[in-house]
Image (cartoon, rainbow, N blue to C red):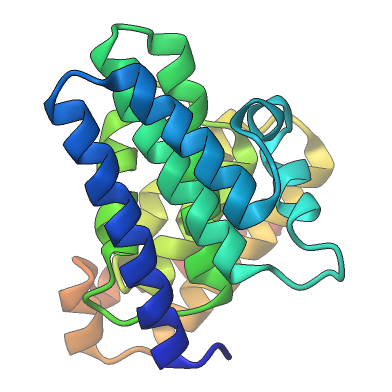
Length: 222
């Protein structure tokens, strides 16, 4: 568990950097903002934007986790700055460049909050919501949807978690993976069964939906 004061100081540093980027963009200095982002990435994580964007999401996480433990600071810096890059490319109508940066940023933010729960008022949660909205017209990879499923359950948004789970089941073609997803679904509804009615209601869910889910996936296995 990372010290909360450390996380707060880290977030403040990232916030100041993002304010500088916003300032540059305010005066139509997008190229200078991109150079600033690249320099900052090299300074904070020792990697350039070009290199980061050449990696798959899974390999990117491994690259910043050399000992098998997520480097939370690097994860936050990279996700925040890639999101800022995506916003610049979006404003330039470069949909391909913005998509790849938004997707990597979302993947890293999700990885971060699932590894290290943050304060409820953390900007990371807002960034996740923004990125999900920006990517809503795209078919996200299975690995990203799986993280989203975990994130929605962790944050108590059980209805969205179920929607994501069914999306995963509908788009999965491998029998072995489908079996694993059904086991995941069974475990999900079993965990929800232990929740209070109030918790379920807050998550836009009901006791009846929990029991329907348990019955469905028990019957499917039979």
